[in-house]
Image (cartoon, rainbow, N blue to C red; front, top):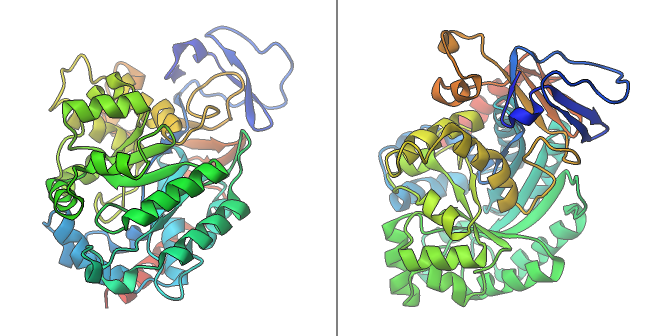
Length: 436
């Protein structure tokens, strides 16, 4: 068995939801065990952690009207479509995203849902229910848009909410679903969508509410040059200066994308401990740019990995996203700096730090028993030498077994007790309805 940490090459011992012993090769457990799974033909990883996603976008993959466009024009083409989302669409698209993530070795997922058209005010409640059914650990962010076209923002008025409603619902969701204790299966963060869709007052109020309840903050930032130009025109500030003005430059915050920062801004982000959710596939598809991952990390910012929305990826596969981060990183940095171990650390420990979790992301005693096991018996791996490197270089795409909190959720490449074919049929039907 190969592992991310060769100190655990002999295996791990699990009791309840936690890892209680880590074994080196040749070691045996110190106490009798009830059940043994022989993983000698597998690569064992900590469960992968997705730091940024938009589950609902699985309904608009490869959407004809949004093809071959950069971020702002891409959004403008999709906002009117997403404004027609309904409760069943949220339910099914969440199942699709979580199933795809789980099958790719992901055990914890953060979602950024910011669309609440009339009749869909309980979208995050629906997502929480689906995550519980799937047995996945989630950090769901209560997103928001309050700055519509009439006020100089990007989204149409039909997709924005008033600030009082946003803040009241944010507090409701924290009180109902946020679990602060170690081992939490559900947490809530506050996530005004972006500088071009949220008012300055809502950004400040969200930061105050997050501090009151000790929850994290999340938003998109510095994704494109268009965003920088918008901030300079709208606020007279670059995106990071605006972020600092509204009280968001702190270690409570993690940002999606974080591409267009200058050297001074990288230094300030690192000094504040602000995290970055790197989304390589989305950044490539929308031609947004290259995130300065290693510069940010060296400055002190946690760097995690996210698949981003399935309309700008167009998938939800975490182990494939690791490979994308590896290849894209080598366009900016030396081969000796962007290694398979480095990108796997972003998808595990790095993402855990972005989410404020010190109980996830590693195969260590006391950590949550979230693990992913990959086989190397497919054609793509034939002739591979280093098994851990093979996962990344040869393009692993599906886990054989996945455990969350000590419970098997995927066995022999299938989600336990889940009808994937029926889900695909429902998703296709709803996607056609949404596009009509």
